[in-house]
Length: 303
Image (cartoon, one colour):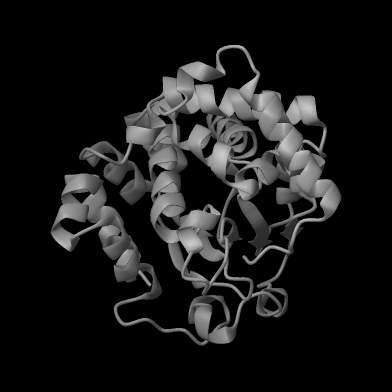
């Protein structure tokens, strides 16, 4: 998504944010050791995401950023793609029918989930919630590093600008109330925290389509996990949502199963980036990058 130029007030806030962050006790422990820390030192958009998430309240935004830096460092998120991770692939295979597919009109990566085809309870019988969440982190890092222009540095070609958000379509067609037990609710709460606290402003728009009557009860619970700003990005639609989706996604980029005209060979869920993600899970990003020649060439292979 190509963001609007910052106002003078926003520019001043970004400068103040960066100065305050560098004065936080203990922040020096992460200098030169953290991808996020490096981004916050060099990318205005990286700083802007945390400022927006905390309504430009500087102290709150700085605290949020420092917590995210520490969480990533403590959980070795920067290294999560480097080595093979077959467990992440197994979780993704069990949970996916979710896949990444082209982009919307704003350049945001389109992420599609067919929830009724997922058996979250079965996944959570094989893996702990923590393991499933880490697998989701693995996929999220793949998207951020290889499919998005997360900072200004990633978009120096000038073609797309900073593209750091996703447009998600969650299809609830065929879902039953049994899909939402206490364990699943706990999982949803942890996933909400992952996105809101450690990856702010990554969601551009969320469509929940074919929502059954009982989802209003589920939504009341989920909404309690979400900040008001996030809630405003979500549209709950009882029908197919084709009309609403077409306002945001061009027909040729929307799978025919969702009312668009795209019919990728082998199925829309089998695009190049999904195959490369499988390779990264099985072999690690280092090996995949060596095969292609560089990280940038891996990115180019998914365009």
